Length: 164
Image (cartoon, rainbow, N blue to C red; front, side, top):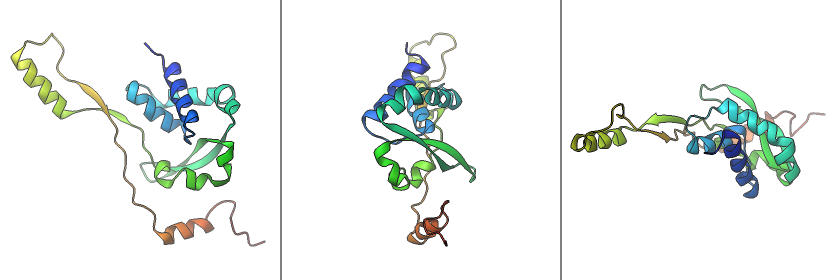
């Protein structure tokens, strides 16, 4: 059985080989598809500890970015990216990706109903009543309007258009 550290390392190596920009949340969501009970905090710590040994040695860097949380607030996260993408991180890691939410394992009603029907025909072992399946629950965000995109150019820090 793979450990959390092994799974995180495989996911990070996959992202690096495909040159996919990622945050610890992206890694956490990928890990949760294989290990539904993995905690984001543990995955984040593993990714951070891998930076000098596995990520930076591949010609990648980390840059702090602002991400949008589900409650409407913002937070700072580390974006891992190839050095060649350093010049255009805003376009390469879109606003939609900055609004991603953590996947939560949920109980799927249809699977539970199917299991209950199957158990009605054959007696089930004691204590086996539900199936928990990880289902990604991502928030949908509308695409920004051109007006919003233009306004964001002037609200960046440091400004793209300094006043001297």
